[in-house]
Amino acid sequence: MSQIKTSKDVLVQTEVQMRKAIDALRRELAGIRTGRATPALVEHLRVDYHGIPTPLNQIAAISAPESRLLVIQPWERTVVGSIEKAILKSDLGLTPSSDGAVIRLTIPSLTEERRLELTRLVNRRLEQARVELRNIRRDSLEELRQMEKAKTISTDELKRSTDALQKLIDSHTVDVNKVGQQKEAELLES
View 1 (cartoon, rainbow, N blue to C red):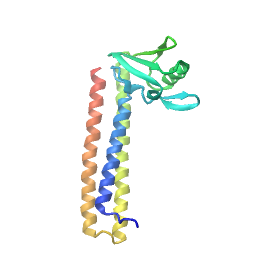
View 2 (view 1 turned 135 degrees about the vertical axis):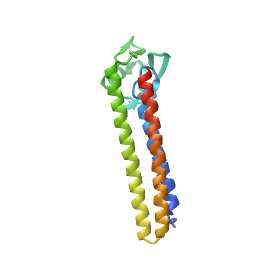
View 3 (view 1 turned 45 degrees about the vertical axis):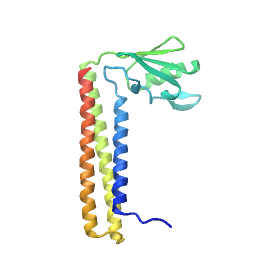
């Protein structure tokens, strides 16, 4: 027997989806290069590992021994070339140097032009996150309207839920803006 979904269930599900969207935004922005070396820059790069696109952090150890240096130590020497190709194909703008066993990535200081380009990229991604939040709200609102139409919730409950939904998107939009401001500050300080 399936349980009847309530408006509270819809709101909880909406909040979970919105949190996931913001977490995905944080992970994606961590991969945008600032002037500092951080393993997050490359750990999710897809590398051709025996014909299967695999995240770099699953086939190599990544460390940042200095503020402008990343060291990638593959667990198998045979994938060094594939890792180098993946780094060159990425939009990071970094050139790997390798001794056959270890790959070193020197993170150069950002030029003013590159900072502006990265800031525009961050802003595009922030807008995509806002659109994603609005889409989640739209889907939840539609679900609530269907519930009201099916008489599982009252018109008053629909109104209260709609207001709660708006408060949810407002608070999560503030979170998106904070994440963006932090990333922009990182870009400008480096």
